[in-house]
Amino acid sequence: MELPKEIYLEVVTPDRLLYSGSVREVSVPALNGYLGILPGHAPLLAELGVGVLSCTNDGVQHHFYCSGGFVEVLPDRVSVLAHVAERSDEIDVEGARHARDQAEQLLRSKDPQTDFAEAQEDLRQALARLEVASRA
Amino acid sequence: MKFVSAAKLKRAQDRVLASRPYARRMLAVLNSLVTRAQAGRDEEAVHPLLSQREEKRVELVVITADKGLCGAFNSNLIKVASQFLARQAQRDVRLSLVGKKGWDYFKRRSFTVRRQYVNFLTKVEFGQAQQVAHALREDFVTGEADAVYLAYNEFKTVMRQEAVVEQLLPIVPLKQIPEGVAMDYLYEQPQRQIFERLVPRHVEVQVYHALLESAAAEHGARMTAMESATKNAEEMMESLTLKMNKIRQAGITKELIEIVSGANALAR
Image (cartoon, rainbow over all chains, first blue to last red):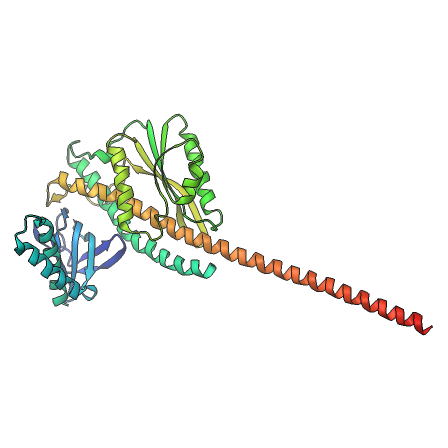
């Protein structure tokens, strides 16, 4: 059986449709690590973690920041239902740097009051945002 | 007022349209998941929010506006909600009210109001939908309610809203089988875990969508109401001006006749 050459990607958040179009391949930040998806993938359902969603379309790479939500993969389409998703030109770099520094400081402080899980989550989000911004 | 509403309407309308893809995809994924999971195997995967029970206690969420001056927007919805309640007469019904107008109406009547959210909708945020949805889920899971319905105004066009009552819980799986083979998914995380996150999320999205629809419909209704109010006022002004001019003219004519006939009498 010949596999299709392209897969239809849709990235949506509760308040908007961020991206839709046919792409060659998609890389999705699932909860347990990145998933590379090519056209003709078996049906799959996964939870999204925090990270960079990339897709290649006509040799051009697009990067998005996304955190939380779900991804549904069908042989001919990928639906990303993200809680939060941002395009690289929408990212507040200053804010992300600030958040990163603050989270790092919290993690270093060894203060028993610190919610480590939360600080780590903040750090991951800030780093992912910065990565997307740097690849723009 | 009309122009204020027109500007707000534009924004609200954009938001409804922007939120539709997500709500649609969510529903499609959920449906696909439910059908595939059933085709695949076991009853174990049935989530508490999908469990069908005999409907003894029913909760109705009524989404109205906080403000009036928007034509039949609120009264229409209240009428539809009341008709629904009349059909549920032998069941134990409780209400959750979003918006001041619904609260004003129902508090004077003999209904159990569980929650009310007044002045809550100045700007619809996802967090607010989560808050409402969370409370509803609690009620359903703890057995406080065996079914939850949403009554809200659906935004059809700027000129038209439609009051609808929809079932929110338990989630009704559509019997539509997704195209292709109903093959079960590969699950990146345990199926249960995904289900446990996806299903509540779906409820939140449905509530959010209803709130946005209602907000857009409200602005549409208000704009239409304000437009006809302006038109009526203009018509009235026109007819009153005409009347005033007629009376004034009649007065002048009368005085002239008096003067002329007086002068004629003297001349004779």
